[in-house]
Length: 429
Image 1 (tube, rainbow, N blue to C red):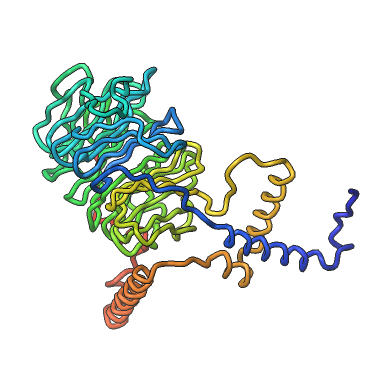
Image 2: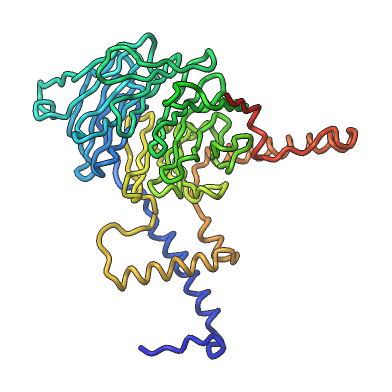
C-alpha cells in the first residue's frame, strides 16, 4: 500500500509508535517462557560441561560420581554413557578436534585423563561398558582440561598447567608461576598459541605455547573460578570471580577491567561467551543463570526454577539460540537465549513484524512505562533478600569511605574506579 512517510503530515506518529512499543514490551513479557527441558540421568551434581564446536546437537557432561554422559539436545536423551569413567568427580570434559569429532577427553580427581570414542559398541545398551581409547596418568588430581584447536595437544590444570601430546604418556611441558593449584585452564580458540589459567592464589596467568613461558600475571582480591575467551576478539577474555562479579579483560591492558558484570549475590562459578562474542552467560552459587550484554554491567535476564540448585557449569549453544546449565541437583537444563523468541520457521511477514517490534522497544526503552515492563522479572525471595542485604553493605562501605575522605588530608585517599578495585597488581614477563 502507498504510504506517506513525511513526519510533518502525521501528527500522531509518535503517540502511535509509543503505543505499539508498549504493547510489544507487554507481549514480550507475556510470552517469555525461557525453560525448554530438563535432562535427568545423572545421580550426582553436574560439575563439568563441554560443547561440540562442530555439532549443534551434542553436549558432554561430567558429574560428581565420575560419570560422563553424551547428550542429544534434539531428542533430549543420553546417547552415550561411561558410568565409571573416573574414581571420584569428573572435573573437566572437552571434545577432540579433527576429522573424527566423536572423540572427547575427560579428567577427574583420580589423576587420570582419558580419551573416549563414541563407537557403536559404546552406545547406551544394557551391560555394555565403554573402554577409553587412551589413558594419561598425572601426578595430582586434575581440575580442568582444554584441547588445542588444530594440534594433537591438550592442557590440564592441577598443581600446575601441564601441556600433553596425545602420542606421549608424559606431559611435554609444565607451566607454573606460583605454588597454588589451578582452578581452570582455557586455550584461546582464535589466537591458538595463547593459554589462560586461574588459580587458588587469586591469580590469572597468560601463557605463550610457542615459548612455553608465561606472558603476564594478574592478581585479584578474590580467586577466579572460570575463564572464557571471546570467540571473535582474540585479545578479550571474561572471568567468573568469588566476589559475586564477572569481569571482562583486554589482555593488552590488564590493569583495569573493561566491564564489570555485577548482579549475582553469590560466587560466580562458570562463564561462557555466545558464538557472536556479543553476549555472555554466567551461573552462580545463588542458584541462578544470568545473561549479559558484553558492554553493559547489569544482566538483561535471569533464569531460575524452584528446584534448581547451585549452578556449576553453563554454556551457549553454537547456534546462539539456547543456553545450557548444569547444577548440583544433577539436572542438565536447556533455556532459550531469548526468553520470548518463537522456535521454528518464520514467514517473511512475521519476521518483519518481530524486527519492527524490536526496533520500537529499543527506541522507547528509556520511557518510564516501557522500561518498567521490560525490566519486570519474578526473582526468588532468597535472591531478593540477599540483594537487599548486599546493597546495604555496599552503601555502608561507600559511606564509611566518604567519611574517611572528608576527615583526611586532601589527596591522601584518592578515588579508585570500580574497574580497578578488584585488581591488586599486574606483572609482565
